[in-house]
Amino acid sequence: MSPVSITPFPKGWDAGYGLLADLHDAAFSPQGDRPWSAGEFRQLVESSTVEVFLAHQGDQPLGFTMVRTICDEAELISIGVDPVYHGRGVAGCLLDEVTKNLAGAGVQSFFLEVREDNVAALKLYESKGFKPNGRRPEYYQTQSGSRVDALCLTLILDVCPNQTK
Image (cartoon, rainbow, N blue to C red; front, side):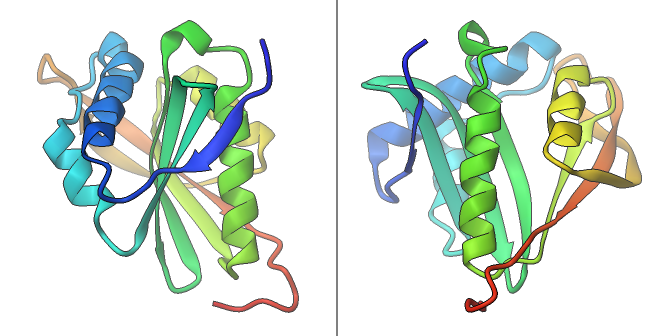
């Protein structure tokens, strides 16, 4: 696979909201999660506290990550990779880029929730240094209506010494 590029998602890119919705659907529908609509993405992305990064090879979108930052904390809202590209390091590249940007902006902690049955994601987060710090019972609702617990994970970032938020 040729190198993966990670670029910021431009706010106000109308066609991009559909692209994010399609990527989310491809990434999450196979495990039974409800896909987000383009309108839901627009509402989130246009928030001043949210940043989105796209992973791509040339014009081919591979995945995305969405992060909300408030003061010195950040939350991973969503990360999704087209299943065609699973196992090729795309999610790791996205996390590395986001983590580097957050640390450079003075963010000290980065947290997320992940389905307790998402083994691949849990392995990825553990490999990046995230540590468990809680559980949210029945946090995720699947398309069938069943509920799945979320595990809460946190990564303490090495903040660049001369930068503060």
